[in-house]
Length: 495
Image (tube, rainbow, N blue to C red; front, side, top):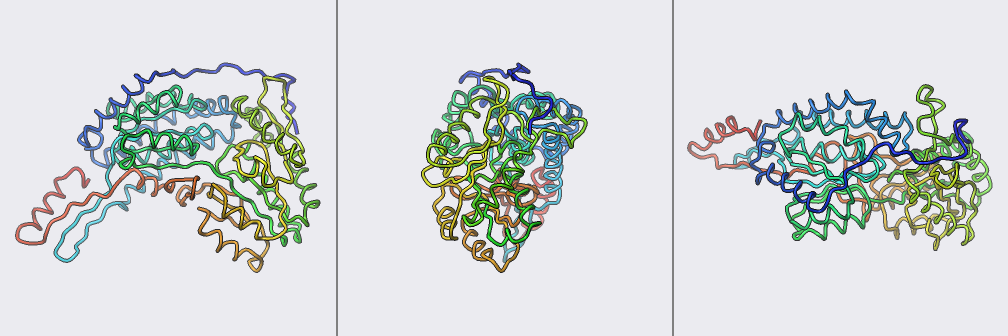
């Protein structure tokens, strides 16, 4: 459903620009970070934990003063509707505050006695982190990596995404005013030009990466000593949604399952790693599914992201993609499926040759051999496959390249659900029952297997990802007990 504000022609408008740094400038930025780390003896890593927490709190307070600007930057650059842009900023602030409270809880500190050994154990920083965030959640997912790294004493170099990078320019002054020099630095420009030279120096201790697996592999292997590189990454996914037959016997349950699968497939234009990428529907229910599903998809509001700033109920649900490269790829996937026998409803580009606003496409009858069977579309294309028996589901899950999440829609646990749960427990990072795939809440582990992730994301897991356990120990003999207590009392590390 096209928004009333849609015009006949859409043309891109320049709203800002990012510096295009050279290889030499990127490496020089990294050298500044290495100096700030100073082999672990720099100002930031040697600062007490509480002082670091307070510094980041001050940064967040200053960022909140620019909340509206940050929301607008997200909305205008990456086409996120105003409500979702607000949500990204607010969720990011919430994540930071909860991470701070998690550290203040002292979960990462332990004093223990094992036999005659006295030990103090605390998680500590690993060094210089190169962080690359994605274009779809450039603030939230970048901060989900860099804030835990900073809070625990690491030095961070952020590679700003080429798309979605403008919001980071609004944060520079806050970080510069509250953190020691070079504690956090920002690099912009082409990723292939700036990142490999930094990695090749061997001076990056940790890689925090959200994006494609091929780019991650290229960065990891460009490090001269990849064995000592600590890697945290969240990568692609081809999340399954499975409709079991029993859900079609309950009108209310079916309606809820359809709504959840549409939201899961098309929220923020399907540009989420957690989006449902391939829906499996019983062949016997093809007709009853198709008509209702397509009607619901066609009712989604298609338009500009700023529509609904005053009336959220009128907000556009499908907005322009960030560039023509994305619409070209969507067309490629659709045409490949059409040529191989799939049925397509929707998929038109609205607004002329320069437009990136695409009506959602429903591609039914997706099967092995089509690009949509294996490739992550990451856009407003809903792929639907028909299945005759559960073995087809097992085979797809077992043989797939990705293994992040699956959503199963059913009305009873007496169906195939327990069997599916058991079989999928060694494949996917999360099994969703009657809800769409997703990452929240942030306290919950967000993980994946195969080419979908290296490491787990949550508040605590992210703090752990950028630290390693450091132990202070002694034997409980003679004066050692008192010396041990005195050291812990005097040390900044233990504060």
